[in-house]
Image (cartoon, rainbow, N blue to C red):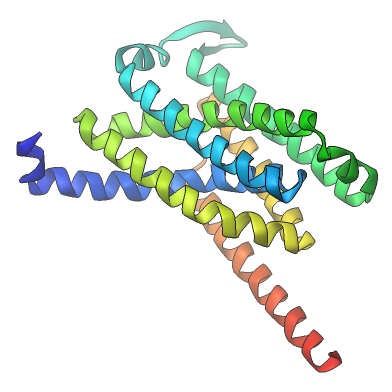
Amino acid sequence: MTNLLTSPEAWAALLTLTSLEIVLGIDNVIFLSVIVSRIPEKQAHRARQIGLALALVFRIILLSALVWLIGLTEPVLALWGYAFSWRDIILIGGGLFLIAKATHEIHGEVEAQEGEGEGSSGGSAFFWAIAQIVVIDIVFSLDSIITAIGMAQDLEIMIAAVVIACLVMYISSGPVARFVAEHPTTKMLALAFLVLIGVALVADGFRFHIPRGYIYFAIAFSAAVEFFNVLARRNRRKPAK
């Protein structure tokens, strides 16, 4: 442990891996923000805390089970000329879940189903939100930790990077969730991002890798355009007031 603290290579690995984990955590934060926007504000804060705590727990558990996790990349099923590992199956299942969930939410927004939002104030809606967060936490944790294993050799560095990334996710999730809840067009954009991320996960499951840089550039560009739209709408309201 002392050797790692005095090693420039270890600090460089920690910085690189932490940056990557934060970028990979964007997907988690977007999904979390959309899910908690459907439940009352008090429950939403609790749901965010529980969801991000579970994300951290799942990542540390997966890191502690490195041998088992590496074994998940071994083929276990062959269909239509493709050999699928457990990792592929989990990514495909998680991607399809994201696509279905985002499409359902988009349909609800387009049809303006106000009754759905009002009926979501009970305890069942809170536990349903947590259940969905758990499913997606597992999928994103698996993808994140396999990436970490490929980039770093020391378990201590991996755990430190994951903890720092989860703290950043926790700090940023509140403002992102509030912004999404206050601006309906931003929520629609976030749902579109989830569809895009779901497609990328399914493609990864079929061993067709879509470079994440393309996806994150599309998200950043669209978010910048939406930010200026929100700013323009706010400035137009000022003279009216």
